Image (tube, rainbow, N blue to C red; front, side, top):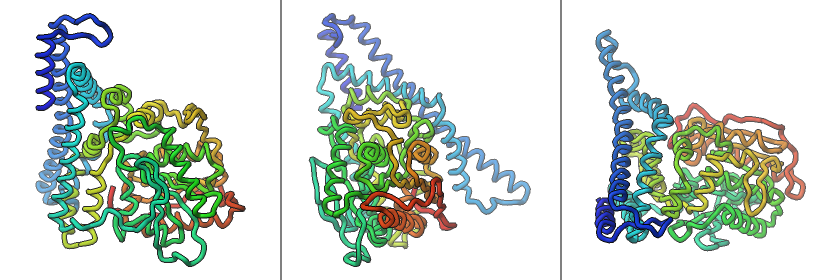
Amino acid sequence: MVIVKYALMALFHMVTTGYRSEASSISLPLPLVYGRLTLEWLGMFSSMLKISYTYSSVFYKALMMVLQEDDIGIGRGIGRGKENPYMRLLNIMDAMFDEELKSEGFAHMLTDYLDSWLSIHSMLRRFYPVRHYDTILEDILAEQFRSYTRMLSYMLSTYDLPMDTSSYDVIYSKGKVRLLHYKGGKIEGKGERYPILIVYAMINRYHIMDISKDKSLVKRLMDEGLDVFLIDWGHTGYDDGDLSLDDYIHMLDEAVDKVRALSGKDRISMLGYCWGGIVSLIYASLYRYKLNSLIVMAAPVDFDKDDGILAVWAKAIDARRLVAEYGHMNGQALDVAFLLRNPIRYTIMKYLNLFKRIDDRAFVETFFAVERWLYNTPTVPGRFYEQIIEDLYKGNALIKGILTVDGKRVDLKSIDLPLLTIIAENDDLTAPASTLAVNDHTSSSEKRVMSIPGGHVGLCISSIAHKRLWPSVARWVIEKFESSVEGRGGGMVGEGSKEYVGTDLPSTGD
């Protein structure tokens, strides 16, 4: 309703004062201005209806299929069977959404909607301080998510749950960026501990790596004998829109030098998660002599092989135009996009699971901690977002070897470090094939793969990950240090080795 108000105000202003084109000093005819604004509004409304119909039709078709199966079963005297009807509904919807939301037709609906929205925004921006109102509206949206987590904390009696589980020292800071050095672990002070730097993504915050006492990836690695460092990119805002890949690589390099100096090691291990894995790969290509080993976890590498819903959407939108209008990618808009992959599964289902385990205090606390982390998404700097979407998702520049950072060409073939690739087999945020492609484009003598069942977030918090995956990862890192000569990786296990560290235990988290 607010933007409707601005549109009417702009229209009134244009009628009374005339409309002047940005590209020319000649005022456009008022009927043309009125017609264009009207057409953009109608186009946006039409696209919104089409998108809504797509979701409604998937839900209706899936529901009818479940009801028909039940009717057939009852008619044959079979009954409902062992599978819960609600789970059947979700599974059917997963398959239908996966097909429908990746389709070319839906991508056109999405781009048509966004194009109309950006056109209206551009027209309003010529007459009114829309950027000011953008800030207000985005703050209101962010407050809605914060209100939700506050309400949830009181409902679940988790309002005193700390954001950080493990203690740490801040050993470096630059702007909003901090380098954290964690303290503790079962073997602290007992023998040599090898440094590992975790490079988290620029979407959401780092807290998922240290989400709770029982599900802390950081604590698990410390208990296994590693000296854990983590780079916190901070809660970026409107004033950080000019940050680019160059800036992130520079800050990462300064953090690496700090870890090297504090640990006394000339080379350290690096673990990059999701978009943090992209930055880690770029860094390893440019500064491989500072690393002893590299771990790439659930990071998109070959973007032509990333066929997930969000990847398809990212390739469809005009990131340059979006950044030109807003200067950044709004974090709450990303939150909504994550939910739209399957609104039923990512809203109703998780609350049903919570209700079933409401007496399990550890589960309840982890549930709340994940929800609080999930909806604490900072804005993504515009320049960086544009580079990731246009150069990587659309241009696949990392694989083609045409990406330049700080005036240097990024060549994955220059990476000859021991390389560990970690994937989740059911990851719907980063296609496993996209991550595994890193092994085809690097020159490492040792390339090892570890995988678990489950999803993207499950790599950090699932029972399987903590029981099987992370002890194996820690042992691998330690082996690379112990078999190295003055920090240089040696004693290779062999190219292409693969380890499945999953079990029959159910995975928790996506």
